Image (cartoon, rainbow, N blue to C red; front, side, top):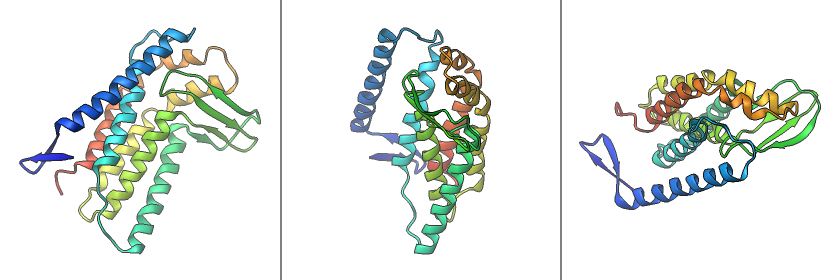
Length: 216
């Protein structure tokens, strides 16, 4: 799928570029359809870009890695680390809270990637499954799990992934808090996206660090 230059920097072949071009074109069409059909559209175009960057980079990273063959015990240990990592970053990133208002289930139709967002609020917990966050955190957890299986992996890579989640916690929580209580202006909180610019850059660096790992 990739050929290597100087055994380090991967470059995609023509077929891979064509597949990714088709994916990006489809994402653009979906976004344009939302802009045309939705009565409430954010004015900042970057709002539409960030989720697709997360999704595309996450998919690229997962497809790029190949887990190191290890013992069954090592695979189980890596899986446990991956699940624990997902629970940690999911909590930091606002996918779930250990509190709730008991409002039940609802769906919030935010821009593509941000939504549709299923929200379930019980008395003891709340789930807010923002699509690009779910994809991004699952990818990071998987890549950390693969890193655990790789004897030459750098532990710093996982820490960088955690930073990407913590750095975007407050805008995620602000966005979802308005939607959780049924605010008609849920999109207004998405305007606070400057932190997402930083966290998106760190997320991309995290995935690259966990997949390329040139020090191997």
